[in-house]
Length: 381
Length: 135
Image 1 (spheres, chains in turn red, cyan):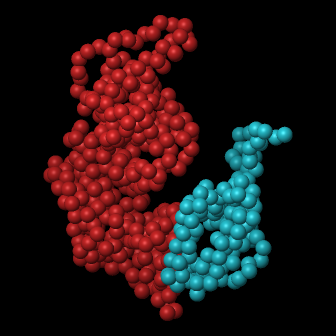
Image 2 (cartoon, chains in turn cyan, blue):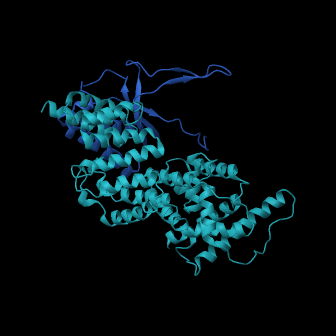
Image 3 (cartoon, chains in turn blue, cyan):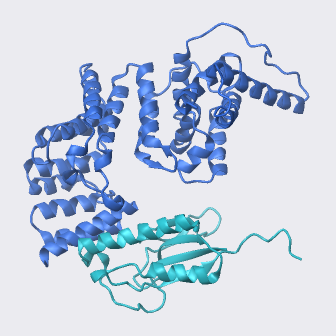
């Protein structure tokens, strides 16, 4: 069974049901049920026309639910049982679903879940596994999200910014269980880039591809985190890098810079270098300046200090930290690194140990503990 | 039967062996320790006894209700002396003895010089659901 095709069909089929007069919440539920049935029966009994099968099964589930609801309320079924004919552009439907599922009225965790289900065609169970929460919790999160956006008009222009942020969140979640959220985020962003020609969508796609290209080199034996400077660059995926750079260049040529294009430009400069010492850090600092103008983000300010440290020496990096909020996660880790580069090993070791206690993930904690151990070992071989 | 194997940053019986904090080990000793933990979880998965493992940040705060319309009262972050949970394993095993055996194995995680650290682990049985048939 071609599960990828099945998942691509999900938003298309939801669109068909919406055009037949179904409301979003019921259409989405009906297609999810049809999807689960397809996953169950297609391996043994593949349909000749998968889309027609899914539309028929989804429409039947929708009618069943609508009839049950109508009889519960003692009313006539208001929806036409015979679907109206006539095709409409499916691309617009799918784009509308992106906007609806990532609606600014939704908390980001709900927008993520709803997008993965209605646009990504994942089952509730798969989404729950990927985010390590019980299936019932995820089901509840999704139905609450749908209630929240019930009645919102489907035909108004959406907020592309929140859509991109949702896709970015999915990408950053990584992967656990049997769902590769990185691959899923790339697929959904790629599809979105086909539906709209906004340069920021291309920027985000480029950013994802350039980061994904380094995946194999980012972890060492036993899942150990390998920082950029120590990564085996021969293991970077040159095909993905070429694709990412090409997409980014086309976006930048449109001359409408945004935060994702700027982040992708930084990733491209890293991808272009054979080592950290051959990296064009001066240009990277310039991109961080752009990014800071665009976002004003404290995290950007922190990362910029690292780049300044590489471009103009550790003292300049430490000076650039002066206007960064010390409460930021990774602030202490960055200070430790800059002090080590400045030759102040004693202080660096203490800071690495302190940073490990403030780490927000186990791989990061273990990495920083190891950095503290490494620097202490340099002091007392 | 499900059991919780609780790791503490502080608290519990007097340490059986006095090791320096992990950031003062060699990088290789740190790697070996981390690898042991991963292998332990992988082995439990293989035997079908693994349920969950989580690690907690070393800083936490006590919080309690302080009456209608008032913000909750907080106490902490903790002073050095208070007991502090570092993380846990949840295992599902045949017997108490098996739970104790596994806790013993986990406590043998290597430290400086590859020697077992003899860390204390607290083993706590879960209260289960009441059985359908009781008589």
